Amino acid sequence: MRNNALYFPYISIPDTAWTMRTLLYWDKLSAIVPLELAYRTEELDVFMRELLDAGLVNTVIPAQYLWRLEQFDTAFVQLVEARLRTLYYSPERIKARPRVRIHIEKLRGIPEFLVGCGAAERLDDSWYMVEASIAKLFMAYLAVCLGAQEGVDAAPVTNRWEYASLFGLGRTLRRSQKPEHQDARHEILDCLLPVPDGKVSLTAVVKFKEQYGDLLPALREMIEVRSAAIALLQDAEDRADAISDFVKQSKSQIDELSDAMRFNWKQITFGALFPLAGNGIQWATTSPDSPALWAGTALSFASAAYVALTSSGLGRADLRDKPLAYIAHARRQFATKRG
Image: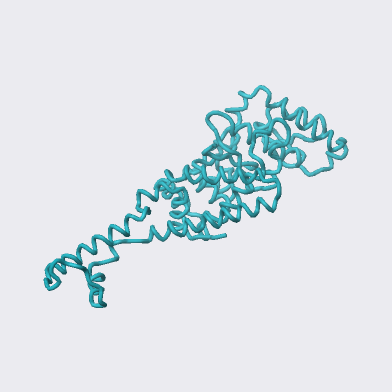
């Protein structure tokens, strides 16, 4: 299981609730950024520049990794050829379809094939216009290939769910997660993990992860294991029911953890305990007529109550052993948005 995520299909990451949950869920988030834009960050979106400045996003430069993959071009060409045969490809039909920009650094030697079959044309020195469905397939392919590289080691993630269905297409993508796995993860996080209301405070995200980031691996392992199990269910309704059951169970545990975190012994004073005697509560002593012994017993009662209340298995140290404690802290830290 990977601890990091690699965003695709775009260079700049969107300023959305999805991005906030992604930042909170993964140890590190990266984006695929061509070398020339990595040094000309003024051409990136404002929010993307803020993410980079805050250290919340790293850049993955394709040229630094693709040279390692000897079959990168060949494998994708074969994938496209098989796809075009299935779609009864004709040059006239493909030339009439919508196109999107892809930077030349990402494509390596693939443009020659795409131009030759009418699926792409060169826009300028840095960009090609590629037929939209092939471009989508390529960006998913690229994210899988780059994410598997040493030094990246990241799971491909996207806010565009039409891309998720591409995973598993063909031999080259078969090691990627099933789309049902990603769907389950998305639904679970959307219901459980809060996001700040209004403008995202990147400083708050950085501080929160610095303080509670050690709790994140246990949470992520629990959700990834459950998402993988849900993905194996063949029926969509069964998957939906399994997600709903897991969310309900998790919310109950999170509420218990949140209640435990709100408990503060300092708010329970001895002055609040002593009046209980006036309501008929008494404690056995060796001499019921001895005020001194009675007072000493009351103090012992306070000590006993303190031990009972703080040894319920939800102390600060114990909380750190519970996977959902990370979400409980996040709910306390940020304005919650519950599913």
